[in-house]
Amino acid sequence: MTATRAARHRMPGRLVAGGAAAVSVAAIAMAVALVAAGSEPSRDGLITGPSAFTEWLLPLFRVVSVMATVGCAGALLAAVVLLRTDGGPLGVQGRRAVRDASNSAIIWAIASFTGAILTAAVLLNTPVTLLRLRLDNALGVPEVKGLLITGILVVALAVGIRRVQTSSAAGLGVLVAITALVPPALTAFPRNESYVVLAGAALVIHVIAATSWVGGLAGLVRYGRASRSGLPLVLERFSQVALASSIALLLSGLISAAGRLAAKGGGFGAVLDVLTADAYGALLLAKTVAFVVLIIGGLLHRRHTIGDHEVSGPRFWQLVGGELFIMAVALGLSVALSQVP
Image (tube, rainbow, N blue to C red; front, side, top):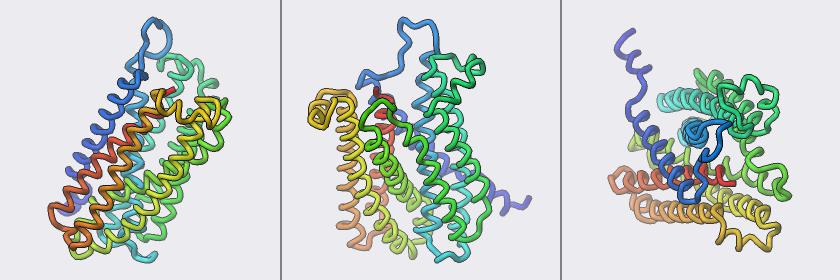
């Protein structure tokens, strides 16, 4: 193998470091949030079922899955939207993006399959080593089935987009990725909640919007900065994605949260009481604060950097880095919210 080909197949050090840093920030935010809410995994007084270590692994793998999802979505959005070539052949950055998307999809699939095993162990109160004795029960759990469906779809995505050469073909990958986001979102709430249809449907839109926004910004950093002359155009396209995603995120988040809080309080009249007195409400408020900070960061971009054409200066990238940090925290809080009963 020549030096050029070796470099092409070598895992980018900055990409790995950035992904590891994002996972670390989100995992720390998730763990702190669970402990603060009093919802951290615990096996006190229990002698059966999975260990506390296994129960901690479940939200950790959810963090990994979320981050891999964001990485995959960001790379696909870059290839299809940010680096758009109107369905024609992908450029150098576009081909780089689909390879990154395929790699992220592999991690996403592994995290989904592992999450299915850990979810089955926790929900069935069975050690992982004994799950083989309750395989039929495990496959009957909706959350487990959702994660397995997602894993299968993502494996197909990783293989299918590996060597695509056009943005239209990469666009099909976007559709598969969106489809893969749906099953876990639809099984996120207990079926005995009377408001589950409202909350679940809104959550699907919420997950897709959040993934598009966060992934788009990650894609901007990864691929847009490679060309200073092309960065303004890429940034303008990202701004359109961010605007649509933030609006959808806000509206769907309000509906999903209202449905979940109403279910916990027994009606929409109890939403405010649960919001201010329940651990779920406290985490929801913290996530809302992070969202507001991101909106303010976006406004600063448009007013002080994009408006002044300083899109390649350190001030711009400092703001982007700050936004990515807050996004990682918000994603960690989202995982913590999914763990709170």
